[in-house]
Length: 204
Ligand code: MD3
Ligand code: FE
Image (tube, rainbow, N blue to C red):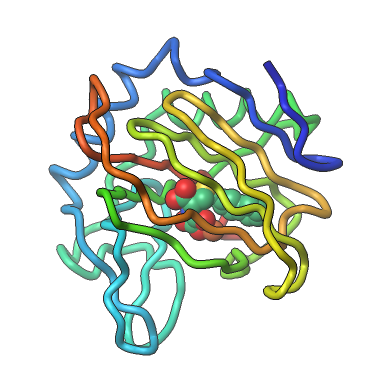
């Protein structure tokens, strides 16, 4: 089912379920090449989520700032290639919202364990802000915080569960958003964790 969040944003409930096993195998393969790490914010704090990337560009953060890198700073190798099954899912999900021919070049993979969270922020490190963003949720449920155009706008809380795919674009692309502190629990496939794949067009 398609649950509208805004003009050009919606949750596609269960959209990733038919390929859940393939997605989990791809995440395992990505992390074998580009290990999970906890990034440092420019302010020197360690993020509570663990991250890795695949695709032409990977999102990175350290004392020098937030940016995309074509080479993994941890391994000094290119990021693992974007798995076709992930690129295809993102392209098909984007098309459901009217974004034709979405070619993601960056797949950020976030791993949340109980207690991990992501504060309200905007995604604005991408070259062009006209392409949509697609996210895939796996594992434990999370409360997604869906804010406004100002950090001070009170966010709506929306539950995202295993298999949900969300597409954000157009006027909603620069909304503040985040993830509330993950509650404990056990997911049958993933145990005590939530994995989120965020597909973006980062380069030109
Ligand atoms: C809404 N990740 O990595 S999904 C992020 O679940 C991030 O790990 C969250 O926010 C997560 O930046 C949320 C993705 C998401 C990404 C971009 C958005 C939601 C968005 C841009 C505008 C509005
Ligand atoms: Fe974000």
